[in-house]
Length: 363
Image (cartoon, rainbow, N blue to C red):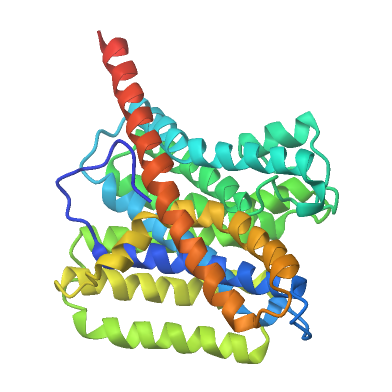
């Protein structure tokens, strides 16, 4: 995912971070593709999402987001107005594709309700989904119309807090950001049980943004330049950690920030240290997946569900492994095409409109 506005275009692209974005999106997609196995006649096993640790991709996204926000805003204006511009820019960056995915989901739910787990499309549900506000679905869970959008609710909350810190100098702002995120989580732990909104907005997963922000600060200050020899061990520990969670059937999501957030932070640390040493990953296809990560993230559920329905009806004897390979290939293809034909053009359009609006305001 690219960053819109308040980004120093002269800063070098951190290729390994971009690759990690692609990996994070694929992790989430793989988990949902596996979940679609249950729809296949050839699949006779059971599916337990708790033993498939692909949700780790979300935690990786959050740590990366914290890092990128700090890295890309170094040296930018630090005023309340600049904070407002940052927030508007982020809103414009993530909303077009998310809104399109939301509207497409609504259309499918109305036209082909059997294709989705239709849970009702009230005006309140639609508006809260479009504007990144938590709202209970029919199952009682805080999920928007587009399932993966729950992470965007937290992203926007993080952007709001980050935007407020623009009233402080960069260094003080980062300190305030980390303290604010930690304080919010601490308040949630101390608050009386029973208020679901307080519990939602004080979720410990917010600390993953703080982890990324601290890495971003350390990177910009040059504190990671001498730690090149730690990149490989950090990556190895993170990978072994996730494998151990998989083999152990990890189910304690209330401890997610430790069990997922720590290995995610180790991977991002390894990536930025490798880039700092000039040893980042430069594989063209991996970079392409990174560039398309947001599109992959928001479109993969459509592809996975369509693939399972079509396969069950037209290829009932299709082996599970073949379904997995074909569907994952389709997920990547659709994500790449969506990024090229919709996400990136819309990004350029909204960026142009945003800059034009700022110029008119200044005039």
